[in-house]
Amino acid sequence: MGGAHSRTPNSRDDRSAVRAPSGVPPRLETGRITGHDPSQLGARHLLALQRSIGNAAVGALLDREPVVQRLPMEVKSFEGAPLDTEDVEAITDSVLNGLVYGDYGHVQLLLADLRVKDPKAWADLDEFVERMRPRMAATRPKRAPLGMGSWRERPRPIERNVHRFWAGGPMSEGTKANLLKMQEVVTRSEGSGTPWRQFLWTSSIVNRQQDFLGFGRKNPLNVQLNELRAAGIQIVDMDKEWNSMTVAAVGTGEPRTDVEEKGTRWTREAKADLDDKKYDKVKYLSDLIRLVAVNRFGGVYLDTDIGPGALNLSNNELYHTDPEGEIGHHAPPFRVPKDYQRVADDAALGDSAHERVARHADNMIPVLNYFLASRSNTKHLGRELSDLFERDDLTSGMASFGRLFVPMDRSMQEKPTPYAPTQQRVTPWAAALAWTTDVSQGEG
Image 1 (cartoon, helix red, strand yellow):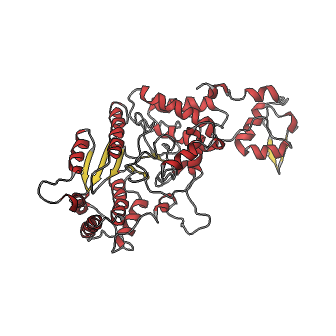
Image 2 (image 1 turned 90 degrees about the vertical axis):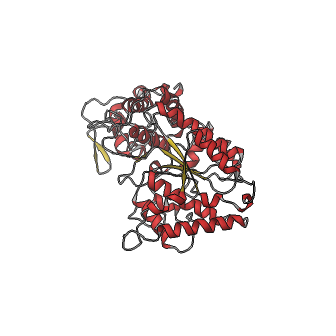
Image 3 (image 1 turned 30 degrees about the vertical axis):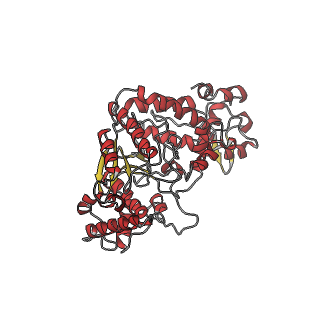
């Protein structure tokens, strides 16, 4: 950990602050400190105040800024002690305890809060944790013990599935390589406590492209699908899934009876569009199928132009950390490689690309649906599917994507938009994945 471990908690306080003559902690009364001369506050009392009311309030009471700028952490240590952003060693110990015990929810909670409040310290710790994950024992996820770890927050686990979608003509070699590289990461996770799976969703209807009809002309995509299947990727034909889907009708909540009819019709329309060298409807079909996949099986949807980058899935699980277990994860909005590179090279955002991308992600709202992580069958996903099937024509699902990250009892019409806290909605993989690759400008 190097620099992170050199930031020993409380050491600078002990050198610079004079201890109070009494062991009785100070009290706050109508904006003043009573029971002590504020200038004589010791390190222990100053720390207690910083953790309870924050640096700004302590600075106002003392008429000066505290020597060490501590920012309270929302998450306590694995043993239940309060933490702040200066407690890097204690945070590191708590994260390692979470990994050893199998409380991966505690690991996510701590890292997400540190990422938002001290991105520089987070960058060092996150890279350290990613190196440690594959070295840990194969410990399956466990419920936190009473009073420890994530016992208070009770994060809801997200199923360990990676979903992709491709239909139509053959993939480029770069797209196929992204899927195969991710499968290598998935395969390595099989020996850990968190084995993952990768699914590729497709449509046999759309794949019967007009360009490949006729004697001796076969769609090369079929050969590619067989190659991906042999590598361990599970191929799902959406055409065979419509008849087993349940979608609630808007208003009544009763199961719709036209899901298979609409799904099949929309798929055929997407194929006809593609035959005419038009691409809107197949994009809309992709918008729909990513919601279907995550709602049905849970997990993470990724566009096919996203590569694994530095992602390690061994002893790695994702969680909903909002109280209702509903708010999923979104990604930073990188449309093309130059968008990513501009952020990664921006020294004003931090010392490393890891830190810069994380800062950028935490400052952005959900605008692109090329990444979505959620457990299956949430109210949010059910609502979006209900709204899409209420329409007669297949249309884009992009417009309502942001609603997935707003609590159910709030509205997108409120100003400002009441998005869930950044710690809950920005993916923990923000600085790990290769968001743009060589194929990002033309495929995905």
